[in-house]
Image (cartoon, rainbow, N blue to C red; front, side, top):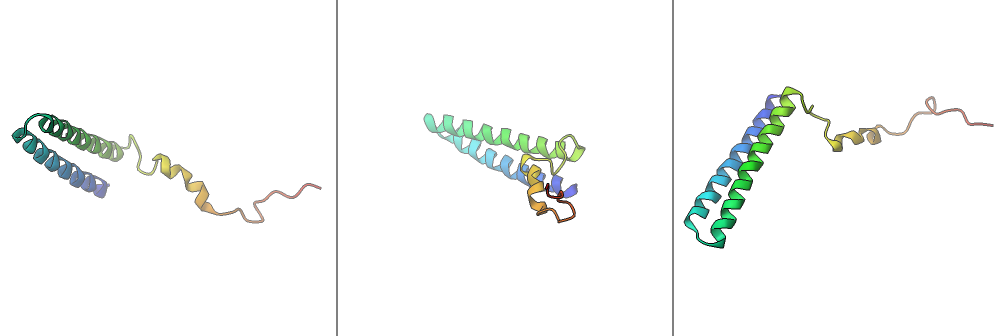
Length: 91
């Protein structure tokens, strides 16, 4: 559980620092570049908040780890059933 939070914290901090520098650069620009920098910076901040929320939801158990849609295909990895599990052929 702690690694889930640590990994989330690292990503959130990286996104927040990146957003800070993008917003700082946008404040020095003008025109379309300023607008584009502001939009990109705020999108990065929103993404950081979403990453933090998802990690917290996994830790508290609202969205259990391992229940992502990609993990629902585990039945494909079990292999073929043995001869004992197969039904008898019909005559």
